Length: 356
Image 1: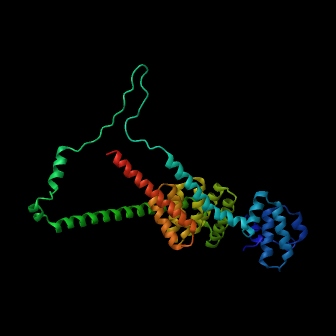
Image 2: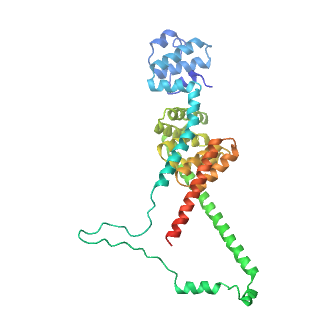
Image 3: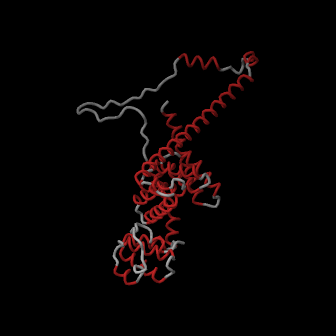
């Protein structure tokens, strides 16, 4: 666990030489320049002029006393270990999502389905209402005749003798092959769309990199700043400051776009902000970096469920359950996605029967 001084020393420092006279209790107490105090603390922690643990702690307290209350609370929270309440809150996030999904499903289930057809308007005053009729398409005589010709009566034994079973089996095989090719084509197109979205996300990060001047920083500096922005995002997320968390995660990815964890964390911030498409794209980017990161797959399943992509959500939840078979919350999410998928499919079939 990082110490308090590691977080207090982060931030802008004064570009000056720290002398022995500056590393003194009196100078620290009278100095009100936070960047200068950070430089003094960094020099003390380096041990170049010796180790003074008490003076280090005194300087840390002085810096904390000069910082705004909001920044001071964030630093203290980052330096502290997670409490039992924090762990419980993290565990309740999934349960809250399950409850919200159930409420959405119940609300959608009670909505009235309006069939396609003319709109029934109130009649003109003094006239009778004319009911709106809907034309039902009937098959043409040619279609009916074609169906009759293709059907072989059961008593026509000569026609059955001429029936080529092998040819009909080949037709069925060709039909199955065509369906399989169509399924593979749809899967390939879905992967291409995901790749395009991932490239678009990286292009947006490239713009942010230019604004932050990342190309002028050394790799070690970029890694340090990426970790700092990630920690800031985590603290903002725990404080329910979702927009600040999203911005911090974005800056962290601009410094280092190879972190699957940060992409997945930004996806959770997007979920709270209602940016469902961006949340799904971030989860996809996280899985491209680390395909074994099951948290990203779980969060993408949650996002796809919210977007109504129940088949894809089932696929993600099944993979996540295979990685974590003892997770009861995941199994509950998988069951909800399966139930919703069956409900939507049955409703679609019913609508087809009603509206030929």
